[in-house]
Length: 283
Picture 1 (cartoon, one colour):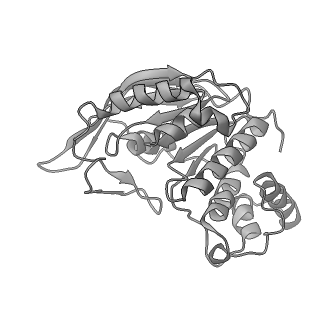
Picture 2 (cartoon, rainbow, N blue to C red):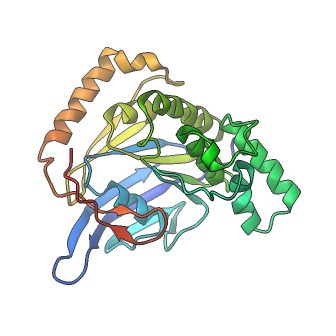
């Protein structure tokens, strides 16, 4: 992969975005007048309580949901539908269980008509990038949860996306594996520098990963605060206990606790464009 390929592309502009969901007698506003700009190569986290519309915003940026009002552009071009230049990674992997890791990663190139030898070479490179060299022949059921997510990330990155959209990709992992995956993601991102928009409701995760944090209100989702982070890179585990980290965490907690008992919002279905209702109350 050309490590500088994404540096000059991947700008995101979201202007006055509102999205209404539901039909019939009970439509509701999921997002209200959201405006965001993300610079090429920037790592931005969207932080908010369950049900605030984070996944709805990501789904609209991915092209799976149509805005009710406003506009979404990537590199100045309006988003009208899904595109490989906007790679999407969910909390639960969407790997083909009947394909091994190498073939899962190479699948996108196969759909583009890339010759078998070339796509397999590129897939091996991607697996090396996510520290899975030697696991090319393993099937998803033979991999740990963290390894499955690495394959998922490699499968997205092989398309050289301008923007990497991540919807709580480590939320199902245990604490130590989650930290390991965060460190791996930052290492990969430091090499390819694609733009990352990362959804999370975990404050520590957002503080550890991001250049900027955009904090969202409960439904209808709005951006209520922006936090620019000056922790040096590469990030190391020691910052998790630093005074500045703790201060910012307390500040985020105060923001998120304000009016946090709203009814949770829909989450995008990783297997399709439909939206399903999550009935659990927000934390």
